Length: 324
Image (cartoon, rainbow, N blue to C red):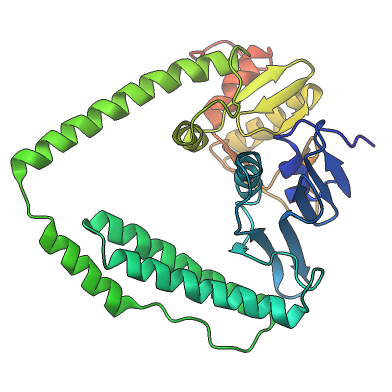
């Protein structure tokens, strides 16, 4: 069995638990069973927990270490985005210097501390948007705390969402933001101008990426990487493999079977859902194909138009669409 994969594919293999272990060529990103690590086993990035009745929960490491590890964390979070997850300081329960009970206490205190921090920041915020962002983040911590306690069967009071305090912070920010139609119009025009420039820039990069003339790497700024991640998932041929813009790879010879499945869903008007018989794309299980032909596999959602574009390129579908 193969054990060495490109860096951006290792998190996907781990999230799907396609095999018991794998690493990248540099050896600084690897997983063993349910835990994935950055550089060494003392710095786990995340662990997948499974329970017969409670399902699956991924605990990701909330701590920070280095720029490279931050890149690993981002890739891991993306790869497991289709699973329930919570970011905590102790993502490996009971295997370190603490007991399980101590790890649970550390994680519970973390949820409370982060909610309190976000509330304090919102009370100093100068815009409603800044408050709303912290409200959303605080709500996620409350939800994570509930999921965490339910999954591990912890009987403790989870932190309550401080709705009244956030409402007061929002009202304060609203008073500070005195409406000014002239000023706001200028901001809107500037924002639209930046968005248009970004779209033009990434349209060229998308075209170059599909032609194997552009590689996503850490030379991109953090903002550029985030913008790239929210673009629709793209496909390209790379040697004897099909590569996604999110870093997964499948054998090229799987394309005819997957294209046939997509065509069958569209022609019948009936969606495919993973059940007793599972269709695979390389190491990855296909979760669903909609009646419109959109495919979902783990964190990947690939629009029919992108699948059809590649099918035309491979000669599986008649020429009749524009190439990006």
